[in-house]
Length: 221
Image 1 (cartoon, rainbow, N blue to C red):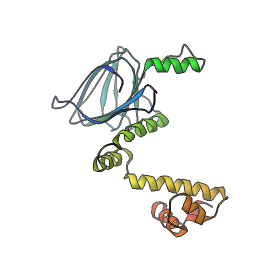
Image 2: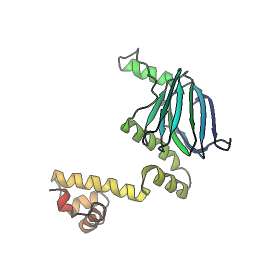
Image 3: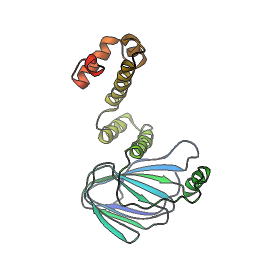
Image 4: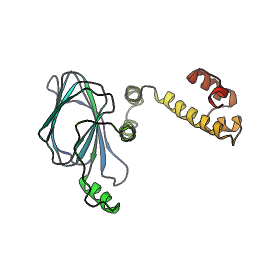
């Protein structure tokens, strides 16, 4: 984990929030991820040394303050705040809050910008916004850290974050891929079932009907 810098956090009872995940992306990426849960309320003060992108994992009313600006937000899960390195930031809420923070080493970002022929590129602060692709990547990093914990804890956090159990999520991805292959029309159903982890064509068809409520032929027409 990189040194994020000055960071003060407390939940409603004055104690520290629960850390659900804390780890770094593989290799020398300069990216770390932290996932916190605040019970009953949130108080956060930070002057980070790194760039921080904070995602709200629960829909709550939050007051945010950064660079002399104050805003009150109640946005859907996945809403983000961009806090460049060195910017003072504060946030307060009066109910349960879960946040996911992606921390980026400013040096790594500057190097990437230079390599992309954008040496003057800078991260611009934002008190609100959405980026579904970045949110999905952040959740993937957090869940990868969870995989090293107990199976029960991982399953509970995964289900709360994604909305379904790990097994159901894997089946969902396999079904998506199977339907894509059927629509391509390059392989038979038995081969597609085997390639996507189903026992046979009948097993694949049963899962399609269970999840989508219609025969496989209706989805691929």
